[in-house]
Image 1 (cartoon, one colour):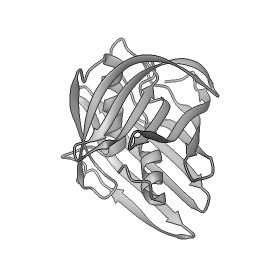
Image 2 (cartoon, helix red, strand yellow):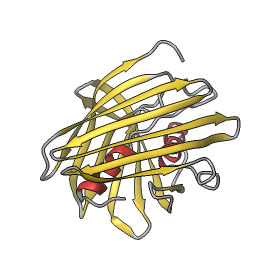
Image 3 (cartoon, helix red, strand yellow):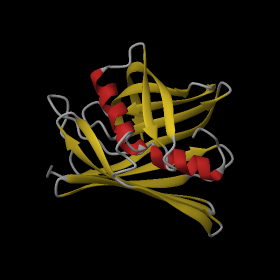
Image 4 (cartoon, helix red, strand yellow):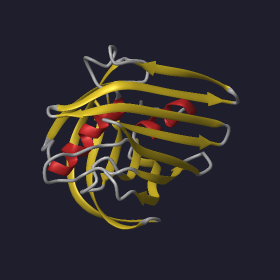
Length: 222
């Protein structure tokens, strides 16, 4: 998940832009369109688009990215229930120079573990609540349906200045159990869990890439 090949990076970039619905007194999710500027060492800058829309009792999150000759897209549909999120369908596709592959997970395959967008929604909600102190684990299925585990550490609030404006973000650090030298630091919006403000990828003590919110259009209707 944390590699820097073209497919792994597109997988990472798209996977980490996800939608979320938070209940209680923290936030209410509304449809939105967000654009992100992605800067990667050794790659041209790229723009990622994230659209969150509501269809009946389900929400759909769809993302598209293009980096030079590589491109990718990913979408997840899920239902919010009293005890959490239920994944309904997940699909993604990636290509390089016109050669690529598509993936799909149905409700039956997602019964045991959520897809990564739904799982990352839960990470966003935990960040807004201040959970994972000092650490917790996040389990999900990757695009192939294989179980993955991440270690999560809450870092607290921080101010960020982005092309879209100045925000207060809630930061968490994510690592893989067998790759402690690779880490991701997310900055989530504190009142819109599901909206990512920043994402930094570090490897070997150096920041290798950064994703920043460049624009946000929000609907007035939930």
